[in-house]
Length: 407
Image (tube, rainbow, N blue to C red; front, top):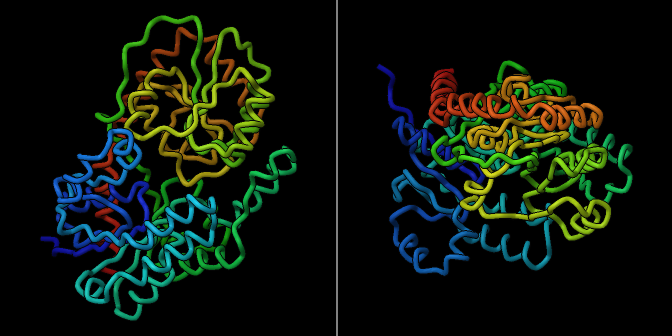
C-alpha cells in the first residue's frame, strides 16, 4: 500500500495551478495550497464576492477556487494586491512581478515546509523556496510553465528580423531574471513541463533530460463544449491569447492579407496593448480586435467560431488549443506549442512550422476550401480533447510525486 504523501503547492498567481491542487486533493495528496489573491468556494469571502456587481464578479471569477477545502488554501494577499495596484498605475513591469514573487516565497512559514513531504513550485517564483526546502531536506518539483528563456531570446531575434515594425512589442527578460530561472531549474529535484517543445528547449540549454517530465495540461470537457451552428457561407477563424508578436500575430496578419475575406473572418480575442490595437486596426481594418474577455464569457464565446488559429512562435503549452478542441473547433497551430502533443495532423487540426507564413496561409486555405471535412474534424477535435482530461493530468502528477519522494 502506498504511504500517504503530503504535498505543498505554491503559486503566487492563478493560471492552471488551481487544476493541479484539485487533482491532488482528490487523490488525498494535498497538504496546503499557498497562492496570492484567491477566494475559496463557500467561504466568508465568497459570500461577500456574491454581493459584488456582476461586472466585477466576471473580472475576478478566475480567483474562485472550487473543490478545495477552505482550510487548505493559504492566500498571501498583500504582495498580490500591491502588485495589482502597481500594475494598474505603472503598467506591466518585470520588477513588479519579481518583488511580488519574492515576498510570496518569504511569506510561506517554515512550519508548513517542515510538515510536508514534497513541495511543488513554479518558475520565476521558486528560487528562494527551493533553497529553503533544500535546507530542510524536502524534495522540490519545479513546474516550468514556458520554454527556456534563452531559447526565447533567439526566437525574439528571429521575429524582430522578420517583422522589424513589431520590435516595440518584444520585451526581452533581464539577465538577472534569466539567471534566476536557470538557478531554479538547476536546483530542482524534478521538473514538470507541459509540452515536448518546452522539454527540448530545456535540454538544448543543458538541463539534464533525466529530471524533465512532460505532462500535458487537461481540459474540462463540460466547461468547454460544442454548440449547434447554423450553416454559413463564411468560415469564422478565431485567435485567443495575448495579442502580441510572440503569439504569432504579425505572421497571422501576413498570411491573412492574402485570404479572400468575402469567405472568411478573423477575430482576435485577448489582452492587447493600445499601440498594437492601433497598428492592427489601421493596417487591417477587416479584422475584429475584441480584446480581453472574462474566462466565463470565453467559455460561451469560443464555440461560436469554426477554427482556432494559434500560430505562436514560443509557448509552454497553449491551453486554448485543447479548450477550443473541446468546443468542437479544429485548430491550426505550430510545433512551438502543444501542437505536436495534442493535435493529430489532418484529423483534428494542422501543425505547421513556427514562423512559416506560407504554411499558415495554406492551412487557412485548406479549411476555407474543404468545408465538407470541417464538421468531422471538429468532432474529432472534441473526442481528442475529452481524452486529455485533468484527471489524466492528475494521475501523471501522482506518479511523478511518488517517484520523486522515493528517490
